Length: 213
Ligand code: COA
Image 1 (spheres, protein in one colour):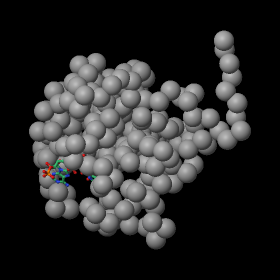
Image 2 (image 1 turned 60 degrees about the horizontal axis):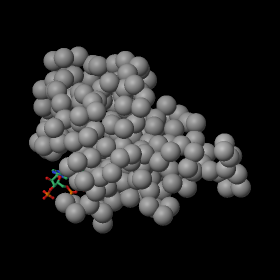
Image 3 (image 1 turned 90 degrees about the vertical axis):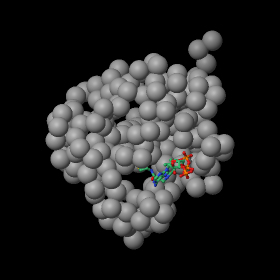
Image 4 (image 1 turned 135 degrees about the vertical axis):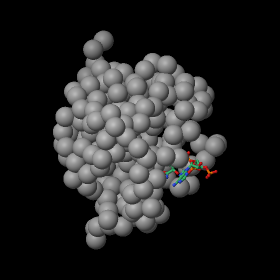
């Protein structure tokens, strides 16, 4: 299941958030060699990991196996603050119904065609957006994602021209949130809905479930 972690419930997810920062360091610094993100404490945390960020984490038996981050575009975010030139053609897209998507990952041992984790996180992202009246997602992405997203039937529109950044071919895009994109993403890996765990399912240690019945 995908857990949604934001300012309202992050006190319940201290251990999992810490795991996820360390996994991000192992993946983005260790594996992808994005050395600008290196930190001596082995936690990959940037200026957009604020109380405004929402994390979608795939957690199995207390172990983080995948995840991603959403940041409101009305707040500082990667495309607006670091790579605005990637939106040179259509312009930056900001609004209370648009989020920016960054830091998608699956732990190395759980990747590949037999794994459902990536698509569960992607479906979780649409499920979250549909439930929260978010109409679109912007993303600074490497261009190799484009065929993968189109294969899923998503509506993806470039905001500017592809540009080489640190040896990577990157493009700024906007993705339409739709029930259709959500359903197609689930169907691609035969994933059952809903993928997001109910907010009430995780409780603080010692907290008792309140019965409404
Ligand atoms: N460059 C180019 N293509 C890539 C790629 C990269 N860095 N990473 C994945 N792909 C493409 C390839 O087509 C790959 O198939 P191939 O290995 O046969 O070439 C395909 O995606 C499948 O990727 P894989 O890693 O086997 O499994 P997955 O689909 O379960 O997971 C990711 C994909 C991106 C989530 C996973 O590779 C990952 O966590 N990577 C590190 C984090 C990352 O780079 N995230 C994106 C930037 S935030």
